[in-house]
Structures are given as structure tokens and as C-alpha cells.
Length: 247
Length: 247
DNA sequence: CTGAATTTGTACGCCAGCGAACAGAAGGCG
DNA sequence: CGCCTTCTGTTCGCTGGCGTACAAATTCAG
Image 1: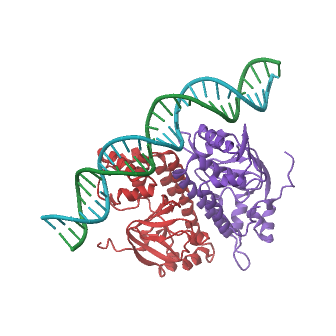
Image 2: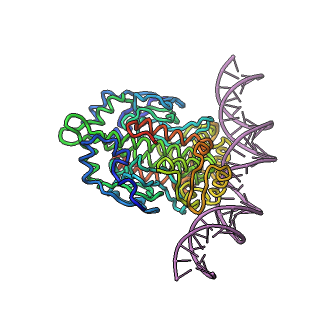
Image 3: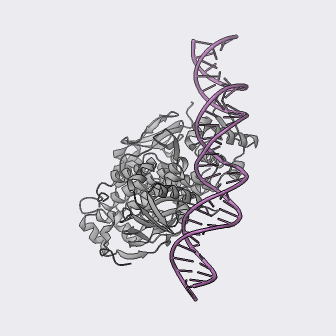
């Protein structure tokens, strides 16, 4: 829990992509928050009054069904924003946003974001609006791919996808997350995750123990993952070329 | 193929929801087109130069995987618009848009739409932008629900959902669509659809024969469908209250 | 150190859906 | 009319994932 290199809003790639003048207008209203594991940023039907720009945290968008079964429909880390209903309209959504990996985020009052979103600059429109709209398109792509992946791919493949998606949004090669929680995200049984993770461990690709997962061989994971992972990654890069390319 | 009550752009509920002055600005550029069954409005990676406002047609957004397997990720009829990448940005998407039910649509050059989308009226912003953004949110909801449904629900339930979604977008209680095509949409085997449809027919809920499906007992379908159908419908109504309520 | 709680491992029967293969039925077309 | 294509019905074995139940291992709290 030491402070990693002094948190800055610009660690979030959407904020980093803004020209200085636009960033300045927002920065005063940005508020650093700690997001503990498992915290819900919003619940279904809840009016959103903030958006969150994760910097070192990861947030899952989860849908929980009537019978309690759940499934992750998208994930956002420092490459994104949580709470698109604020600027897209509707003010509410039918899913939960849950902190999947504890860390920091900057939050912003809905009003402040909406104001900047709607802003028409001196001569041209602001860059925030097109940026957020293109991010929303990348979210669409992610959700579409999730739907397809849920239909056609095995738990093994999906676990690889999930690990890689998380890894892309974290600094090291380690994540902590129990198999139970991963199962909730993927919408499968915990035993299924145990089995799939066991295979990956036997193959020497990962090591895990009681909620700590270390990725030992990333290329190995990439060789086992389904196409969905790469499709989503590429689509993000295409839509948002101005963000820093992943390290 | 007789002309049903003289096609009008206002049969599309998004266009119908625009105030007259905004509609007028667009109407000159609207072009009536016939959409034959199976036509692709766009393919993955293809630059979109038009958006389509279906009136009597239905369009499926399909994702096709490397191995040829496919899955529907959303559907749009007279309540929506096809080609959101035009105003959302990106200009391209990774899925196909296929005509699922032949009929009419009005299409509009991308430039014309973008212009109106960005318009800031004399005193206030236009209503087109918030309208389309809220529609996009409803599409998000639909895709999220598709992902969840793919994960957790049976083919039987999904067939009911699919039938109801189509029915909502058509005038009568009849649709033509072979089981093979339905299977492509749902991303399942044709035999699975045969079996599920057989059950519905035995139960007296539908009648079908060689690509013609007649819904005999809509409440019966509603009693068998999973929650996903209703969630999507309600969310659309919430987000777009200004559109005419379904007949 | 000890008991409790959490996390992971394993096993068993079950079933939905897959893949393949084929047969009948209904239209379309020459 | 008769052939051919398209569409639908049915079967068989297989497997991935589910539900259940319980055991082992690790960590935590007192």
C-alpha cells in the first residue's frame, strides 16, 4: 500500500489524450479516490452522479440476473472511463460496476463532465466528446465480442482472455483474484475455473495460490486464447490511436 | 409486394421523434431504399458512408468468427438506426449488418447525418444528438443482454426471445425465416432450432412451415422467454420515452 | 498453538448442445 | 409431370459444463 509513483490523473489514458487546455478545465474538479476490491461504483438503476477514470484500478461491468447468476460484459482500466451513461444519456444502466482490482481512480462530478462534453470551443468542438464517443465504440466492440465468446468458446479460452485483459491493465505480471471471483466474472462454475487454471499451471504458464496469480509465460497464454482477445485490443487501438501504445 | 400505406420516413421511430424543423433539414437527403432479405448493409472493416433508418425492414448485427461460426449481437428495426459508427466515430465496425426481414428503409449520407448530429441550434443543441446517443445506450443494453443470454439461457428460451424481438419490429404476426437462418443468428445448430421450434409448435404457440412462421399465441411465448427480452424492451422504453409506444 | 474460515482439489452423475449422417417432405422449375 | 433443391425431422454417440458433495490445504484470528 505504498504510493506508487505519485498518482496523477494523466495515468488514465483518456485524460492523457486531452489537450492541455481541456484537461485544465477538468482537472480542478478531478478527485482522487481509492477503490477497494469489491466496491460497487454503481448498481442497476442507480443514478450515476460521477464518472470514474481508473488509473491503477480495474473495474468490471457485471450483469447479475434474477437468479443471482452473473456475467462480466466489459472491463475498464486506465484505458477507459466508467459511467458512460452520464454523457450518453439515460443516467442509469442495468448492470453493476465492481472493482476487480483495487487501486486509484479519479472521479468527476457528472455535471462537470457533461458541461465539457457539450462544449463547443472557440472555433471548433472540443476533443473530449469525440474521444469519449470513440471510447464508447470500443466498449461496444468489447461487449459484442463477449457475447460471441460466451457463445462459442471454452472456459479454457475464456480464462486466457480474461487473464490477458486484466494483465493489460496492470503494471506487473501479478494479479490477485480468487478462482471463485473469476468464475463470477466469466459466469461459470468455480470448479471450471479451477480445472482450467490447473491446466495453465501444469503447462507452466501461470502460478497461483490462494488468490495470487502470477503470469509466467504471457506468449503461452496468447497462444491459447481465442481470437476475441486480439480483436478487442486491435479495435481499441484503431479507435483511439492517440492513447499511449501499451508498453 | 404491394406498397403498404405509402412509405414515409416517419415510420421510423427515431425520425418520428424529431421536431419538425430538424426533420425538415434531413428529409431532403433521405433516400428510400428496398432492402432484400440477406443483403449486407456493411461488412467488417468497411467504411460506412450511409446510415439506415429501417421502416418496414429488420436488420441484424452479426459477428462472424474466423471459423465461420456466427452470432447475432443486436437487431434493429423501425425503432432504430443502422450505422452508429458514422456519428460515434471510427467509421468502421467489426461486424456485419444483414437484412433479416426484407422491407424498406431510408438511408442518409454519413456527411448529412454528422452535420446535423454536431449542430448547435440557435439557442440550444439539437435534439438529434441526445436522441441518437440514447439509442446507442439502448443498443449497449441489448448487446449486454445478448452476452448474458448466450451464457446462461437455453436454446428454447433464446428462440422465444428472438421471435419476440422480431415480432415487435414487424406489423403482422408472421415472419419468414428458415430455421437454418435463425440458427445462424442465435449461433447454434440448425437441429437445435428445429427441436426448440417443434416444442413451440406442439404447444400451439407457433405454426411454421418452410420458412414461414406464424405466431399464434404471443402471451405463450412471453411466458417461456427468459428475462432478457423484457429487460431490453423496458430499457429501450426508458431511454427513449418520446418514441411511439409499441402498438 | 489451535480452531475457524477461506481457498483449492476431486469425484460422480447428469444433461444441453454439438457433429455427423441421413430420411422424409414441400416447393420450384423445366 | 417429374426431377431437384431446399427445408425440416430424427437418430447416435460424444463432450463440455453443471450441480452436488466432500476433502485437503492454506491462511487468519484468538
